[in-house]
Image (cartoon, rainbow, N blue to C red; front, side, top):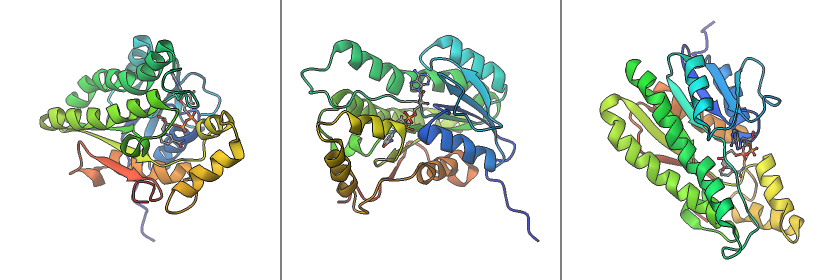
Length: 245
Ligand code: NAI
């Protein structure tokens, strides 16, 4: 019988946001594909068995330093942790909330990339995967800071992918549609009519359904693996046809 090829065999990968939703699925899939996984989150409760936890805020330099030290050689980095402040009108959003969304969703992704870079360079290269959103391309209502932050990720992976190509460090993103996670449910629960908001969002996808976490995690595994050796500065849309509809 032929042995299944492990797509992330012998790779050490740091994944932020590994205790919930997409990050949790991605950590589990990375383990299944043979990786050693360092999971970073505010708490370790939801991290899959086998993940080496680093508990802390992704925006703190000390958290980055601990994860980088724990990992040693880093082959892959997934910056998945993210927050949203949906349900707030563009002129009612506080500057503090705007800053917080950008600190977690954008600045921290850059900080983690920079933190992992010396180890990736020493290893001869690596792969970084960030998470944008279909909303970066289509816009949306009552979610300005979040959507702008995801647009910034599209630009960040393009410039980082370009700049770091000589180092053999690939930088890409996935842009998911609405995925059934605590973040989605939390956002919907803040709508005036949560059931109607869920229906509207679901039907906005050509496939008339929400995505499942594994459908995004599989795309991330591909980008982390050597199968994606010619991909950098790119954004893979995995959105059930949201941008096409
Ligand atoms: P989630 O809320 O289920 O999980 C996010 C995780 O990030 C949580 O475990 C949370 O504790 C962690 N986290 C948040 N802030 C942190 C901080 N400062 N320090 C450390 N950990 C922190 O969210 P979900 O849905 O899995 O989202 C993951 C990523 O995917 C986010 O970047 C999100 O913007 C993006 N995304 C999600 C979509 C969806 O429909 N669920 C659609 C498009 C993108």
